Image: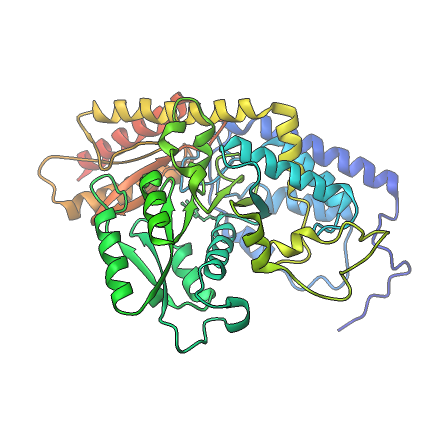
Length: 489
Ligand SMILES: Cc1ncc(COP(=O)(O)O)c(C=O)c1O
């Protein structure tokens, strides 16, 4: 194919003043859009025509910076999944913060290599990690790293557990030692899908991941856990880790963290907490006690792109034993070691704390927002999200046409529209249709899940733009839509 015949090999703008004008325009357009989100549909389907336009031939020849921006504006920008809208309550997706968007521009313009080096970026990341430890009340001398998200933070935690609790030398032997039984870890049946993927990816295999039943509150059964550990040991297997949930994906259940910490201490197991969003509630005065025992976990994973509201991607792993963390990933290489002065004098600290070498400056958006708004304001927003869900729980519980399907201890509620005389299968179909109609109407975005075979509408509030009224709009839409569908049946 053609090789670029560009006169100038540099990719800097040919005309910096034109570029300045375009950049100002992009900022103005973005601010106009973000301040009027509430007036727009939460979601609108991307038209087939636009999909076709986005499946264009390889652009061997460029157009211009302005044309690229204009195509972004018309073909890409309007068609999001809606998660920045004030009435988005689907899955668990943060809504972003305008200052963080600005920080991402600044971070990528600086473009520091965040493995380390003698520069400001890694100092900023270390600061952000210290602030996060304080925010979730985790020991200040713990270690940590920012990662792309909850899946990576959780998998990294499990990888450390595997090395820390391997009966031999994991880094030398891996899992190939045939004298050793299968290493096994545990989580409840409500644990997010990352854990199964992790079992595969870390070479343990799915058979190494034991999922335990939950009680009526969707919390892990401690009795079943104790029995399974004992049975595994008797069968020659090697239990190494328990995953506790601090906020399950389905219902927001929090496993009994303090009891699990006691059990893990007794059994010599690593306690890893998947606190993808729930761990952040530890910062609130009102709901912090729900997370009692979090500070005793050996590692905890959470996302700043969920309940810390930052734009994707930014996840965080904290590890109590800093040496253990480093021992898992400490890397070697003549090209990175032993420099007494110069650009790499400070070494590559983050290369020794995870699997990645080149990393972006995710820390800056967290640092700028923490500086600008203060951590108390984040804690207040989180607390308000829970308060609003608790208020909507009261509305659901007092509405004849609605039925709550699970306890709602935190910021997630699962419920359904009900109508007399319909079977569960018919109610499942009805609620599925309600979900689609609400999403397609653009009024807002709830999502759904299945609890014991029952389709549940689900509202998860990690949205700093949302108010109680926004939640109420969705609940009223469910009632209205359910009634209309019944009337038409
Ligand atoms: C409890 C829980 N764990 C893990 C994850 C995965 O996080 P991520 O999507 O950031 O990889 C999620 C995502 O919603 C989650 O809710």
